[in-house]
Length: 164
Image (cartoon, rainbow, N blue to C red):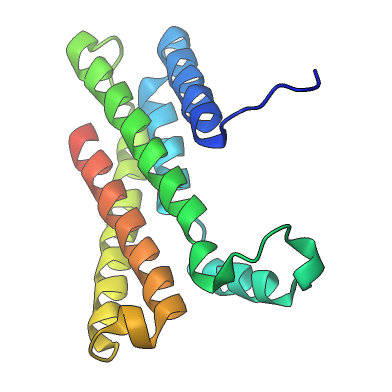
């Protein structure tokens, strides 16, 4: 279809809502919630540097408009907030219906994710605390990267605590 525009955040929100609804229909809310929480938490810590290196290695011609380093983090922040909102709704629906319980495998994965999220929240907070005064002005890219990592870990902890 030509001439049809799609708002990316609305499309992401609708897609996540549909996926959550499918988890409900399939009776896989606990397993689906844990999988989506892994997405929320993000990849291994080293991948943030890889993404930053990849973004900095792109030619200027690869971008239609110059975004600057800091604006490259706006889209992941929006993604994290949309994912957290959909996960929160899914967990609330699950708690209200209690359609199927969590398995011991789900409980083990929940504990592992809790440990990982706590470690990431702590390490990112310590890294943020070690930045110089007013880091959003003096170390903008590093501050944005660490803030995103901390926000992901904090929101993942919120979701995991609700799943308990």
